[in-house]
Image 1 (cartoon, rainbow, N blue to C red):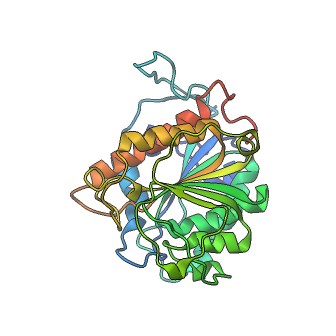
Image 2: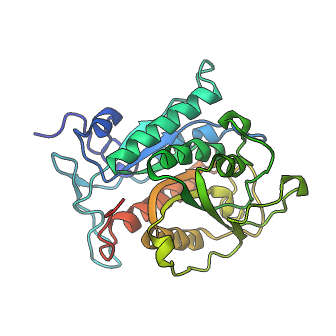
Image 3: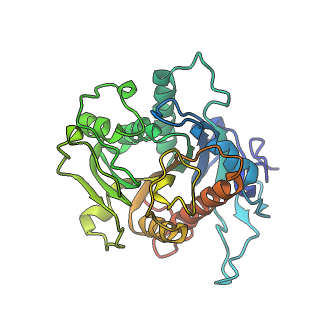
Length: 321
């Protein structure tokens, strides 16, 4: 008999959907979960990022998985390798934290607190959460929840902008999507941060940059040192890292960015060579002309992360997370 919380085919990418409660209680075991964060109150410019999870789910490809009673996946092969895709793995779409339209009674502080608590509880289940936002300020409460379990984490972030400011940000509601890293460094939730894809200038008033914040454009596919390989890593993907000629549906597009294929290769490398404990994909903007392409890009990133985290047999899948 199948688990009553499992709804085969009802999630994004044709994955089984499930309720979050059984995963948190341990009655339903997951190796990775997908959750939407339809929230954009941290935006200082163009809003609409709250629609990211909805666009992703409605237009994502519906893969024809087979799903066992306990949610174990099968049924797909990769024609390039002939090998199975996520076979024997348990991945569930747990829906959204909150809904669109946003409830005006739920303020930023309440939403951020709920996200921090949810991440902390999910982390203790050992499932790897992949969050689809939403604006980039959500990374702050997310990383705060990770740090409550793992201690200070390393952030590997792909972003056109250096989202840092040295201004005092003692509370999470002091942040915006453009400076949340300052809050994380000030609270000690982050041990170090690597930013890739950066191609914009930063006002001098935002500095000085911390010694453990490194910005670069090219990823470079570094070989991890042993001291880095075992560190818990949060992977954050701001979709404005992609060149706007290929991905225009974001709030702050910057010319000269990555091609999607470049980003996928870099993300796959991070997931295979680092101990990634959570992922967020943020800053997709509602645009009726671009929604299908937006969903395709997010879907490709989610599948690339899942396969690199769980199908990499050289690292034993999600071992040690």
